[in-house]
Image 1 (cartoon, one colour):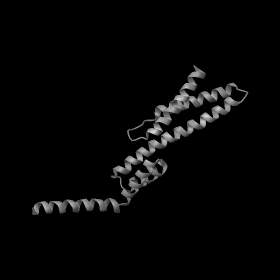
Image 2 (cartoon, rainbow, N blue to C red):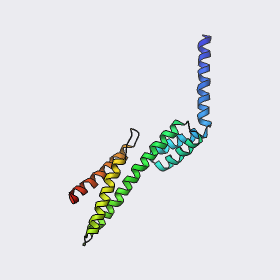
Image 3 (cartoon, rainbow, N blue to C red):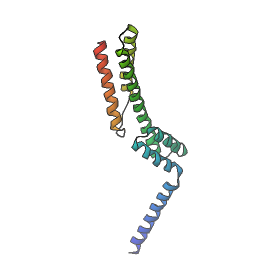
Image 4 (cartoon, one colour):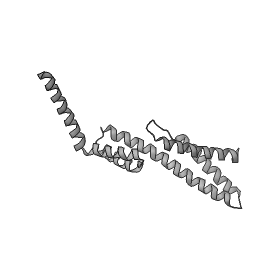
Length: 151
């Protein structure tokens, strides 16, 4: 009975020491906060906090994971934002009465850039599915536009 009680106390001591270490260590506090921001979709704030946490402690695996995933999410966000901006430009060009060869080349370049950039994106299991779906939709729109106009 005494050995069981001693085992419980030793286990509780190590558990509380581990919790105290994570709560008092600024690197782990930053990485937990970064993880929170990642899951609510604020990838820039998550990236900044995870980078700070990782620089403070290079052995902080949570910070490294959040840093890597935030960087990927930011790449997806950039792709989506650029795609939407290009689509607005294409709509503006197509709404004009005059449509010259320079406009056609400009549209072709935008389509080719977006098609090639999509191939560079590499999702992971932790990448937000909304981001991957939005990026895929934009890619499909540019692929379809390219096929209709230039093939």
